[in-house]
Length: 123
Length: 123
DNA sequence: ATACAACCTAAACCTAAGTTGAGGTCAAGT
DNA sequence: ACTTGACCTCAACTTAGGTTTAGGTTGTAT
Image (tube, rainbow over all chains, first blue to last red; front, side, top):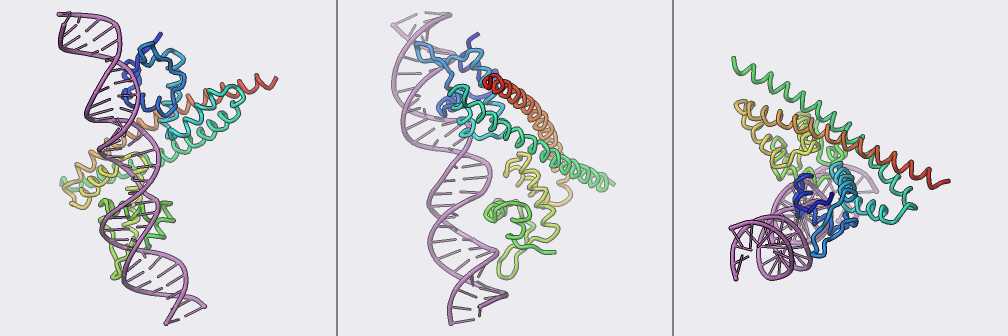
């Protein structure tokens, strides 16, 4: 199945200009074009894009994602580099989750205090 | 106990210019100054700062934090607004954690595939 | 006395991650 | 024929969140 940039934008909840921006930054080198020049996403492209979105949404900067993509296009001998990068990113994400959970606790404590305060002042 | 901006920066792992920037954006209205003009953080200020850092690190934009701070300085009748805002933020953070956990799974699958690929090519 | 460190302000500068605008191509429907 | 919609490029613009720079004050150690 093939998709246009507009269809992908809707599916993945990104803007069209965001997708074009990623392409310009070299994040989507696997994209084909029609004779007319329109970008074409096939299943493989969609799959790769999903990985890229995943890395982006977990805080990896675009430059770093580009390095990963460049390695991916460079064949199997780059597997060790990619593996190392993504393992490091896994650690980062695990830390992020943990810190966010601690922050969540603090937020919930604050909620409890504000609720207590509301009950007081309603008397 | 009172602290200087430099001490706070080290404690909270922020830059001094970041703290001054937050102050300029109106995030630290509780700060006192010495006669000389130096910022002074006391225990209350430190506590409030920690909440602000917590909101910031869970993705709340500075403008929104400022709204919260403004309400906080405006006395008890703003408790409902503050409560509503922070409850909404709790939901956002819960969603963020969940999405990040899903992304983590995808990253771990990718790691597994890359490791598999390395084993193959080492034969 | 003088040098150094730690603080200050205001304004200019910077980077990442996009968005917007002008001007253009093409295919489909009326 | 012509309008509409979906795509295109390239360059300029925007926004958030800071950092840097230049110039200045103050308190402490040598």
